Image 1 (cartoon, rainbow, N blue to C red):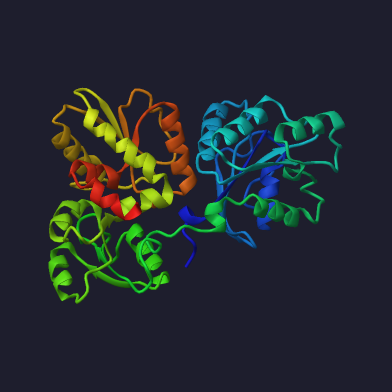
Image 2: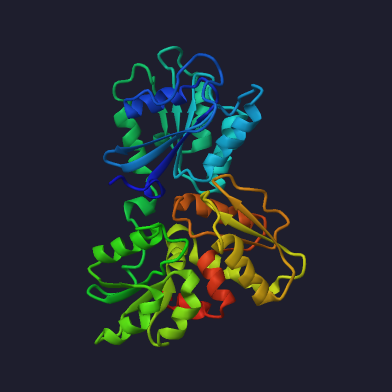
Length: 400
């Protein structure tokens, strides 16, 4: 089975038109993934390619349109290119003998603001060498010569090895030491109950992705796992000679499950586990406090990282809005937004993010940083639900 895209290292390739971004991707992947042409603006949208890049591991390349695209569609292409930054784990800035200018400097400033590691590739040295003055400008900006490669994508036979070696040196800690989902919260051989309701949101014949990933994480951690529906939870607890070390439930069954599970047994949800795995748990907990201060007319944005067909009783469009209005007693304006593009959140009193099972951690962290810069509180589904139900302290106690 292929590694999930959300768990892959995302490598974004950025730069002006015709600096060799697409040629680099084709060279690294040994495939003609991107169309290469001398005509500016050939790459019109983000091109994604997933592969195994040894010794790095599973990666997804993101080849973007030129940041200096002045064609009729250039503005929209630039928007797409800039939106890719939010899910980039490692960035590659391509330039050539012309060196760097305002476009590249703006990119690098953005990478530094979002704490995204990056390096610069100076391409086309087979055509014309970059001047010492322009190269020194790059070194001064980057402040680390090991993060600047002079090369020719066309002729450098060692380029792939140089590229991989540079990536390895700047791998985010999440990829060097992958975090656990739940296995680090309890000792090996512990019993864990997973409460998985079979409802309209559960795919027919399957269980949803966060539940699958949590199950695998606990198996890898040598735990003993008991999987039940919420309707069979009480019988499961009665059948166990020793109480479980942890109960993990779907957020939508939180209230029912919290009433069944004794207070002395730790309880949390899949969504809260993913708040820690994919984002910043404390930031989400802090953000949930804003629910208490919501007023009539306040705008709340419910943000999903993937698109799906809304169903009756949809969690993001029906259940969470209902919980918020019941908890606050206020007439709130609630908007929904789905996808990788990040909307303007100015004017919102609160953002509630989904569990992020379909996107990578970098995108969620970037969204948290943007929200903090704009002084907009941000939380996630599981945290918001448990707050509205009055059980947040219990739901996060296991992480203390």
